Image 1 (tube, rainbow, N blue to C red):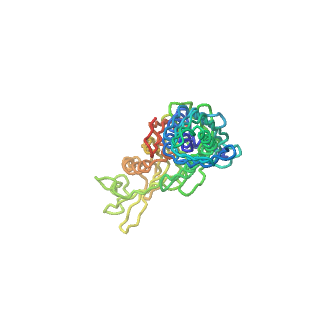
Image 2 (cartoon, one colour; image 1 turned 90 degrees about the vertical axis):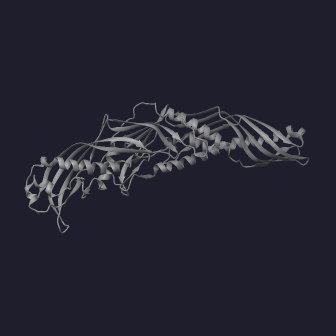
Image 3 (cartoon, one colour; image 1 turned 30 degrees about the vertical axis):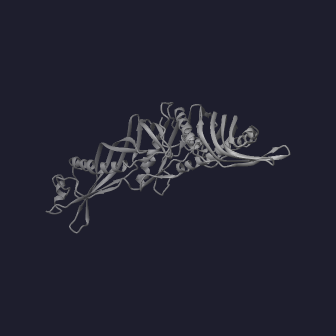
Length: 481
């Protein structure tokens, strides 16, 4: 039972957490009725698989019989068949989740042994249990202050009918024995079902811990997806608010931005919706800016046809030619002067980058001499895709403007250098940025759950991912939706 609960709730784990923060989220998650139905299908299949291979503890005890007792021992209990014709997971608006298993039946093989002061017998037996109903309600404790605590607030098991067939020596007494064996089997079913569900909740909490943990993006940044507020449970879906913020690695400095509130549109075609706000991407920009990711030095050859050296600039900047008859190699130091500004509009993801590029000559003694510094204002577009449970990006340069900030080689027309500088940006800077973006951001997810057919939509203020999911059960055959 605990394993069934774990799987059935694998899409719903987040919905039963509570936090005490009131800030707007960086990420929102919506689980739809379609997701609940898939969880039910997978849960039933895996419940049947697990029950058929699970070992049950022996039942030993005694029942009153006239002036004495009937001592029994039931051992080697093994489930051979399970039928779950009716099961449902439904949402209770404002409170939690209701799990109902109805009209379940199972067949059990067992060894049995009975002793009284008059006689004893033993053998194999078959138990058919039918019309079993289990109803459980899971909710968030109203006084809970912990990030991963959920409670089984209500649980009831109706065991139904128990039919036993025995094989042994004293066949004429079997009907007499059966009534004494029914009681412990009946009692075990009633007393163990709900505790097993409660134990299953602990398994759920184990998965939740991984969501609350900091997830490493790369050497420079990490992301936190812990919940930032109470879940909103509606009739057909659950909305969850996640903190959804990116920090410099090992440095959880608050970003200078505030998350704006937003709402996921009313859609139900997919099992799961994830909405990443502009704040999430802006916190990423801040984290990488703080870590120095937008600063780089270009010193190697950037063309197989020519080297970037002082001779390239001599025709437009006469003062450069005075350094030496032999051209000097030059290096470019690019620095971001401000945190890149992220903007999400309908079908548009742009980043405005302000910075500077300093051009330095490498002198014969290996020292450098600054030639000039230009300011840069670049507008870029970012396209998104999902691969291997990560959100990946690709940067495209839309337009760029240069202006002279400082010069040690006199005044000159910056426009004459734009082709060279644009070429360097397109061949060095953009590919380097895309190499970093291709590593991707890990998406909030649970163990063994992968996204299928994800679709990305960019709207004003957030990026919406709509996706179905697939749970891979490694022990037995897989179940697909």
